[in-house]
Image (cartoon, rainbow, N blue to C red; front, side, top):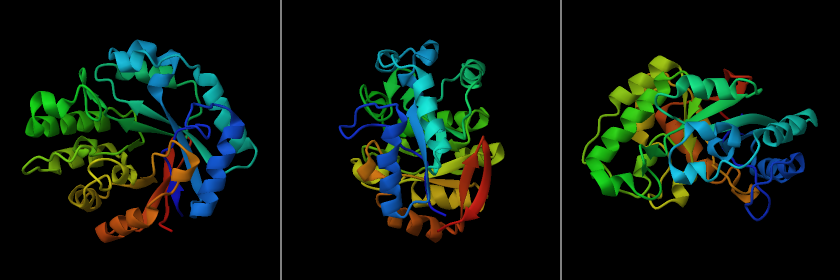
Length: 267
């Protein structure tokens, strides 16, 4: 089984297109890439229903779309027999766990991805850059503390691009993944193996092989992802993702349905 569980529903110009017919090109691309099932995971901060969760202007300015058409687009596509799942990429908002849970409860999610893009007002992968403001060592410490808290929140089914802090290529001199992996393993959440990092300045997969090996040692389940914002990226570089997974000792991938995961042999 091969899944691609992280993508954003767009048209050919990478513009938001939350309608069911925009799903079809992604499905066709998945079939061509040998991907059996895909999942759409729009950014939570695009939806006006979530406006109360955010304080960062980048996020509040984008809260203009209604969540209902997005949900309907994927649900209708699934009803048409397409191999798609309904997900959402949810930024972790510390202290707002109950509110996040309440906002998302009415919808029939198959899974929720947990992401850490901001530490306070500082961006992990954008401007103003966390790494510039606090330095590399502190950025890594803060990021992985927040990721561990996200894992423990019981909000998420999988953690997306779990070592995103390395995106610009700056690395802590030495780093112990043990505490964050312990938090992930104890929570039962999966981690995402993503090819998106190959298209970023760091030029490598998420997560680092040492991180993934530590996850395997604790029996942390995994998902696969491209983080596609257009159909042509679906399943891209999955040969390298599979190589990384197998090198770490993984033989299965997680398949989600209505917030429940099961293990399927890795294709």
